[in-house]
Length: 132
Image 1 (cartoon, rainbow, N blue to C red):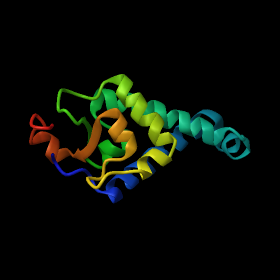
Image 2 (image 1 turned 60 degrees about the horizontal axis):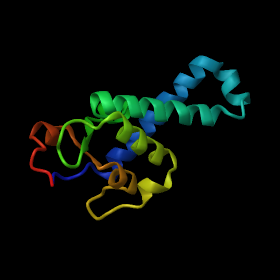
Image 3 (image 1 turned 90 degrees about the vertical axis):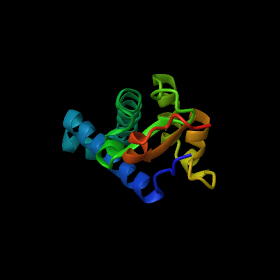
Image 4 (image 1 turned 90 degrees about the horizontal axis):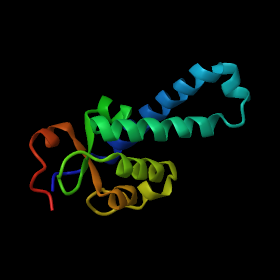
């Protein structure tokens, strides 16, 4: 199995995703609405789950992961992550605890349940067909 991306890389990608999601929400409800609206953080979470799910299923990673040249791949190596598994993974990340429960190889509970892992883009281009 290729080495998974480091915790630092994944946390930075998450911060980029959260910032982008916050900016999208601010674009729709305004900066004043952001600071006054008690649901602004829930809106941000919704945008995060939506963007992470869609981008993971269609381009291999969330906005933050793409920006940091990381990709979410299926552990079995049989094609891209499908929409349902991308949604499961994103929802589990949003719950916070699953990513903090992890294996020695760095895969969190969210990845274990979705059958995925986060790798560096260079590892993806090297091929994942030999994963088991």
